[in-house]
Image 1 (cartoon, rainbow, N blue to C red):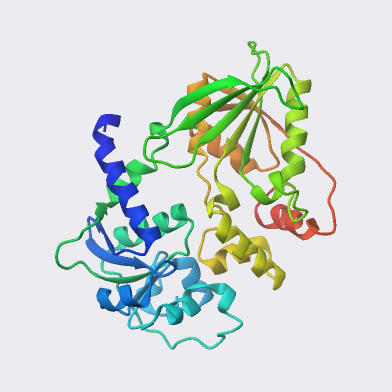
Image 2 (spheres, rainbow, N blue to C red):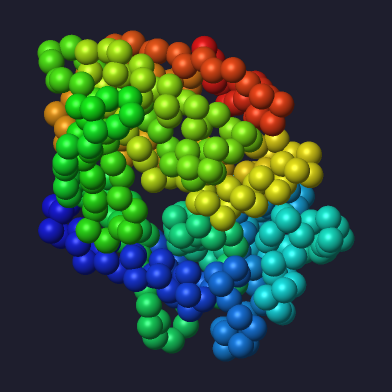
Amino acid sequence: MSEVADQPRARRAARVIDALRRGWTFRVTGADGALDLLAVESARDAALRDFGSEDLLLSGERAVTLKLINQRPAATPGPVRLAGAADTVAASLAIADPALDLAHPLKGPFQTIATGGEAAASAAMTMARHAGLLPAFFVREAKGVAETECSVDDVAALLDPSRLEIAARARLPVEASETAEIVAFRSPEEASDHVALVIGRRDHNPPVVRLHSECLTGDVLGSLKCDCGPQLHAALHAMADAPWGVLLYLRQEGRGIGLVNKLRAYALQDQGYDTVDANLRLGFPVEARDFAIAGRMLELLGIPRIRLMTNNPEKVARLEKEGVEVVERLPLALPTNKYNEQYLATKRDRTGHQL
């Protein structure tokens, strides 16, 4: 489908995500059914009364935490629907938000039922993550006329990285290199702009490239809980020492779950969960970032071959899937501290990071 044909689709999906964040009812239609939905986190009791359903739709990851997958309707991977689970927003949050698990340890018993539309339910989880909200909804079968609605294909169009284009570029002297150029990328309906910082003088050699996902706490505030800030600055200096390099700064906070949900994961880590289990308890996959965005950025910059600076072999595989030739993987080793030792050990032991 052409970009022009995709524009109405992406706009419909963008309007639905706006409704989701505002606590409005919306509809998602898939090939196997349509669902009316109301996001738990942004809902109010008055809106819930108007909605008229006490069923909850939760992600498959959250269903595992709640030990629901032994019930037949929840046995296959994917979103799970609970019949008559909560009659107030507070009661639904006690089920959906793991930060409240200690305060509300006794939940259920729950009855799981068919979602009524698997494709629509999965698309709703994707939209919740994209909006930075908990992946939990009040749900009912579609009825009447929907004020705001989209299809599963509309959501796919909104998130299609091929819609990304170069929006602006300028010279930007930085501490690591006075010859840097910054390039901003934008897709029409998206609020987040990704950027590339090109360091040094371009030549025929493949550049040193670093994919760096946004980390407000580490990059800006100097958090000691992760190694993001030190990795960012070490990568820039390594590029300055090479013939040339490119930093791709991706607006995918918290491995793609958003800033607020990342802070929720931090709170769970304070309760003793590692980064992987914290994300799963929140109802998210361990890795939710979209590296196809990086592939598109490199395509627009005219860079088909790179030397990738990463400790994560999965990034190599994901970029090569997007048609980028990774001629070399360059590890990035930095000292640990007492606050991030467990975090780095989890990346090594549970998500395959290696030097």
